[in-house]
Image (cartoon, rainbow, N blue to C red; front, side):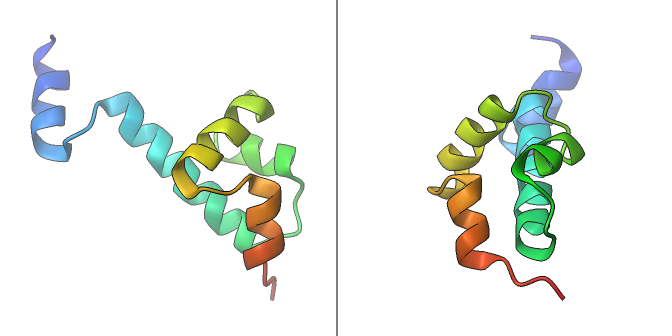
Amino acid sequence: EPAFRKNFKKVYLVSPNKYIRLLRLENASKLLQTTNSSISEIAALSGFDDTKYFSKQFHKRYGLSPKDYKLKYNKPK
């Protein structure tokens, strides 16, 4: 295991890739709550090339599909 990855995991308790994915999902959840953008637009804005993969990862993290999450929490200003 390269030194950077090893040290990163020691500090953040997850791999660099997982950390980035979590940040992207957090960004997506904020966009789902505050914008009227489509799910595919939010996926792209959050750094996901594949909407299907984004939806799967989002559901895994938040327990709801992006669509259901948006219906439940979206309160645009």
